Length: 212
Image (cartoon, rainbow, N blue to C red; front, side):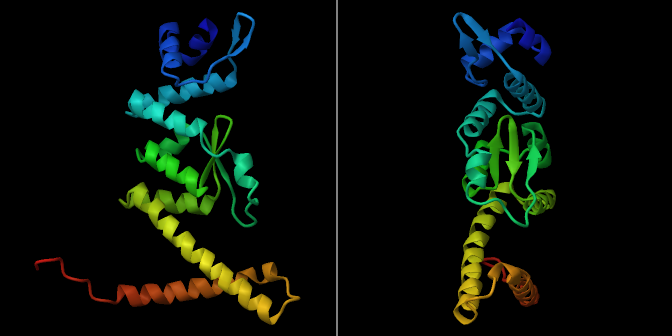
């Protein structure tokens, strides 16, 4: 325990406190000997980094609980590894930095539920670099992460319907065609229609606030 505390840059007393608060997983035991490994050290360094960024111990406890009970990367990829998306590996500190204080237990749990995030040891995996980059850009523009996640949930519903429509249409008329080969055509239709819909939406006059 003393060696682990020294490597993490904390006191043994602090380490014991973290154990009591269940901020770190229990050590592996062989008889009366407790063994700590690199996962414990990584977790301690994460706690220190989050504290330095202004997170409270209660918030960190909620985050570690969500982290420990979240979907693991093996479960996520068991649903089918993305064919066009690039997963991104992040430490908890890097995730906190990217999202500028928006990594709350509620947002973290929602992202796990949606399958945007998964855990792999002491790392976090975001399933899509493109979605990660868009989320970060929107946060920098002032959009809360909770709103981004809710929008993502709604977009997914429409995306599922669009995918089903395209695949059903193609298979109904050309059953021998490899639908996956035609994926760029589906994406082109959606992009063009979204672009024209944005044109129409942005040219509409803004509605007046109530009571104006």
